[in-house]
Length: 242
Image (cartoon, rainbow, N blue to C red):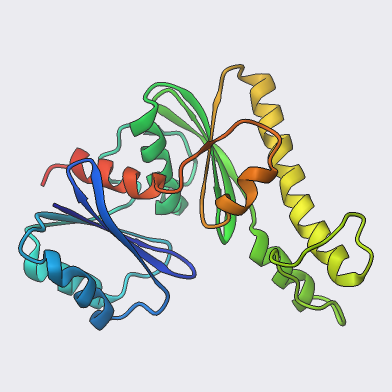
């Protein structure tokens, strides 16, 4: 069995894979040695390999705990053995979460042209053409946009996508909510329209923490794949020699 750990900006996600099948997954807000040990304990004697992806410094206890009982532990980076080539001028700055999503897309649709939209803390738009990652763009996510309006102005309140609104907004909170939500939706729609025009038949994949909220609001057909980062990490783990 494979242990998958994805350490993000706001939470840590873990999953256990039995071959290509996800057996179970967890989402942890307060990540600690105790929480991690408790999650792994039921599978302790069954785990053969593990992979760690992190957008920030990996806590020392993670590697210590994993290497104590798991024969092979891999830390994802641009130097990992990947199924695609990276055409990026600064590969060392390429986030492992983006690499994992690309790998997941490649696993499901090998050789296709794909736009992978990962709507999380930041929104990334990554272009995979066949076996080559051509590059991508990074934009603020929903929560970051709400926080920026609140923090960098004197009187604007902190908005949220959970607030009901009309557009144009009829009060300041509605105006903030409509502006942030619609602004991101328009942005995503235009990215998809532009890529579909330039690359007819391109496959568009939507993932990330806000993808469930956004998918019903996007005008274009997308593949909604919330587990693509997990699947990509598992694929990379199988792809790298143990």
